[in-house]
Image 1 (cartoon, rainbow, N blue to C red):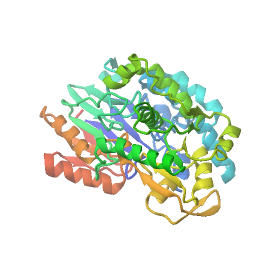
Image 2 (image 1 turned 90 degrees about the horizontal axis):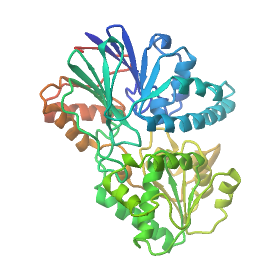
Image 3 (image 1 turned 45 degrees about the vertical axis):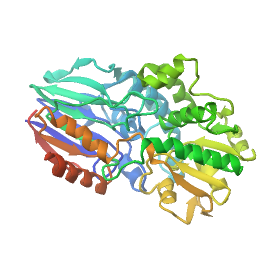
Image 4 (image 1 turned 180 degrees about the vertical axis):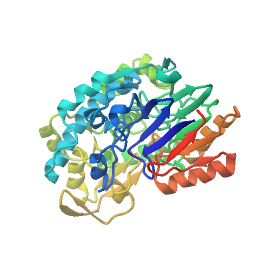
Length: 455
């Protein structure tokens, strides 16, 4: 028997961290920051509940900070094994971890403490980081082999299949909202004995995909007609590239008649967009066909990349109509906060959320209808219009998570499904749905829960 222990991603969407112990081999899957609430910093600072020096491998599903953000601390605290991910994930992670250093430093200065890690802690991480392409097997110690399948969530995201003694466990990471605007569909899992899966939207469904484009077009047309300012808090990774591609189509196809300046106010998003342009083989057929036809899908007339902080401040002096895209996607930091502070009390402004908003984040408060919010110590009355489009989520919704597991049951091997990486009500709803609809033994694990598995 092997042991699976849940050291993160339980009772919360963020902080993914799972330990699999097999015949003396210790394998971590993901090592992410906890995000979105006041207690997160203390959790991130705390000692790991296992000895990092005893871990042999760290397998990384994808490059979001809630899956990679504690890796420098892990290495700093003694981990010296192999880190393994797709090449795309490693390249993106290098940018994101460097950016995280600046955020952690700012937060630490504000709180009068030392940061969890610094710039000098990134190079040792990258020195341990090996890459494995999709659909390539790799042997680990202890008779374990791994194989990476496309999760369709963000560029480079993978489901990790681990095989041992003719048994298979799959760590899904985050599962893509297929069909994606940009990426290939999530691949199927049909022969797993165990699945550890996400449940961000385990209790609700997105609006139909055909509606997301219509809604974005309507919002942009309204901004143009009424000379508004539209602020889109967008994650630098994936969401930004999706929305740029959509805006490119809206303007080039004439769905929005007038041109409007679009400011991408995020140095990080600009760098990551460059990585996307490098790995177009990961795109779906339509996106690749558009590129082959000569369309620069991440550029169009009116799009301006803003790198310098001084240029960012100048954006607010540009009269409407205009669109400002900036991070962070949950409005918990980054340049978007300054734009929101400037426009939140302006009735001729609109804030459009296009992704998940964690409990406790400014984005969630606005999404939930807050009339007043505190931004950098200043209370602001909310007069701007608040909108959301859930169809641009990079996560599968409840029905499609069910379909994913239903497909996995067809091989007749599936013994258990561990439902994690969701708010409690979302995870528990999905657990019950899997039990009732599929007769699957679904489990909602608690923090530090140890499960013995036949693996």
